[in-house]
Structure formats: C-alpha cells, structure tokens
Image 1 (tube, rainbow over the protein chains, first blue to last red):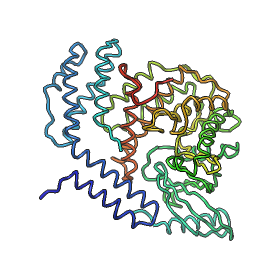
Image 2: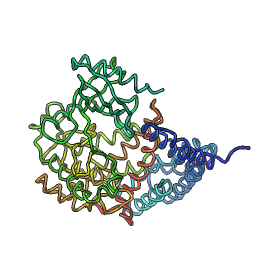
Image 3: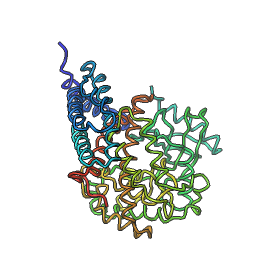
Image 4: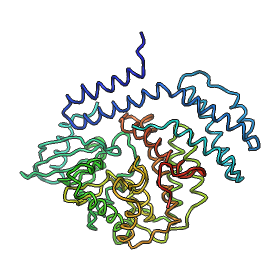
Length: 138
Length: 347
C-alpha cells in the first residue's frame, strides 16, 4: 500500500529530529540535519496542497482576466481563461499557472500606465490573496 | 561527499607553515552552521607553540549570495585599519591549488555570539537595550565615515546615481534567477522606477547586509565585530538603515526593528551618530528597495538550490520561506487598499 505522502514525510522529519539529531555530536551536522528535517516538513505541505493552491490561483486569474477586456493582450488572456493544465502533476500545473502570471504582469503594468485604478486594485487584491495562499508560517 | 575536516585542517596547516614561516598545528576544527554564502570553519591552531583561534571562510561550490571575495576581503582590511569593529583579516588565498577553492582567514573573536534569538534569553535581559543602541549607533558611525579616508574608493566603484545602480542590479538578479514569474517583484520594480530619488547627496561605505545575525555581541552589551561584508559597496547612507529596519528581520513582530527596539528610536540613534537627517521621501524609496533586494537574494537562493551543486538545505528553505515573507511585505506596503496589516507604514 502506498504510504500517505504528507504524513510519511512529516513522520520522517520528526524521526530525524527526535531520533537522529540527539545522536549526533557535531554541531554542523546537527544543524544540517535539522534543516533537512524542516525542509521535509515544508515539502510535505507542498506535496499535499501545491496543486490545489495553484489551481485556486488559476481560477482567480481567470476571473480577473474576464474583467479586463480593454487591455492589450485580450486574446492571450481569453485563451488562458479557456485553458487547463496538461495534467494535474505539480510540474504541469505550475507551468500552466506561470503562463497566467506572465499575462498578469503585463496586465498590471498596463493598468499602471493607463492609471486604471480599479483594475490596479483588482490586481493587488489578487496578489494579496495569491501570496496569502502560499504563505508558510512555522 | 564533504572533505573530512582533518584533511582540510592538515592542508591549511601545511600552507600556513609556508606563509607564516612558523610551526603550525591544529588542535581543533569544526564547521560553523549557517554560513550560506561561504563555508565557515572555526580552528584552534598552535603557531610556534602559542594557541591561536582563526576563522576560515572558503568559497562554496554554490552560494546564497554571489559575491566577489577579494572585494569583501579588502573591505575587511579597510574597516580593520579604520578601527571599525571587524575580525582582524589575516590572509586571502585565491589559488585553488591550496584548498580547492579560494579562502580567507580571520582572527577569531571570542566570548561572543551572533544568534539573534539568544538575545531574548534572560542572560541578556540587562544589556539587550544597550546592544540595540550600539547596533544602530555603529551603523550611523559607519555612514559618517569619509570613503576616501577609509580607502575603499581604491577598489570600489563610486556610483553616479546610487539608487539607480542598485535597482538595476537587483532587478537584473531577479530576472536572471527567477524560476517562475514574479508579479510582486515586477510591481515593486515598476514602483521603484516611478519613484526613483535623485542622486545621493553624500556617499558612504554601505555594509550591504546589516541585520540581525550579522554582528557579534556579548554579555557586557558590546558589539565587538560586524560580520558578513560580502555585499559591501559605496552607496547611499539610507540603504543600510532601510535594510536594517526591514520587517523581515523582526518577523512576525511588527513594531520592533530587528526585534529589538521601536523603529523611531533606531532612526533617532542612527541620525545622532551619522549627523544625517533622514529624508523621509528618499527613505520611503529605500524601504521598498530593501524588501526588493531581499526578495532578489531569496529568489537567487532558490535558483542556487535548484541548479547548483551543493544542495544545501538552507538555500531551499531561505529561498522558499523568505521569498514568501518578502512577497507579503511588499504587497502589504504597496497595495492601495488595506495596506499595513503586517507591517508598519512606510515613513
């Protein structure tokens, strides 16, 4: 049976912290192993919810793009709004979202140049939600 | 596999015997955790029968900050000559035949520590305020020093427009190293270009990474050494001040600069020591720039982990966690609606 990936990584990180580190004498190795354990914990959250968070970003981008029909690049944004990742593998979803984020950067620059304050606000609202969605607090 | 420490110290001792014309042995060697830009080792040497503590800093195959080692070493020399508290620089060796990668050697500063979290321990309670005061006073004193008298103009570029140069450099780092599109960074870069201040009225030696963790302190409330000058350059005095006050260094504490004291007090200490009155408009720019520069460093760190050879976990952790926080700081400061939920307002 396949282990539950998130729990397995967290358990292994905990095992490093509780069982391995106390047996290490060298301060550098202790710190290095502690960092490996922390990174495993962080990666477990990415493994569990990385696709979900990127898909939520993509859906929010689509909604934002639908409100910005006057800006240059409308065809590219419409194409993104009609698109989906090639698969739900994290790499594919990331590549798909990256295409949308590139379009967002151009749209945001246009909103600033044309002083479209409403669009600028909507982009910042997206960025606030986007960064909050990906926050990692210990 | 990393090189065994005994091999490293033996090779170093053979080299030092030749350079110092002395009998050199090693009594103890250990690698110091946390050296993200250089591999750092503490050695207790015996030189002609006398014990001597040294710090070896060796270029890693991959690093958090890509820097020019000789510029950093010459900055240490200039600071040491001028009486700025730094570890005494002993030698720089760029011949890779000695330890496979270039390295420098500094005298060890004993009886101190750098971990900022430890300042919260009871043993520092009576001197915490003194250390905080010293931190921003030293920075102000650095800003007040004449760059010609320090001698740094001999090996550092003197910028015509410090803010423009720094922005160009760090925006370039982000665009070169980003593994994915960076909409927050790009928005900040555009904001910084729209609000670019004029050329600096005066220039100083900028430490470049003056923050929690990059100075040594002791239980007497002293700061005997400022560390990590790898990003030192000639620039605007407000750059270091803004960097030292970036919300990241006190995160998630919102009101204490570097987790130590209110921002207004830190600025007052700096103004008194430097003799410079902070130009609020220019400082607003340098505060946003500080967060962008931080973002560039963390993005670069992620790139190093992804494409470099060492796979040091600190590169991935810093590159991930700090990018996340710095992105949130920039959004919190620049968004038109409901700003400053996570940070104090820009001055």
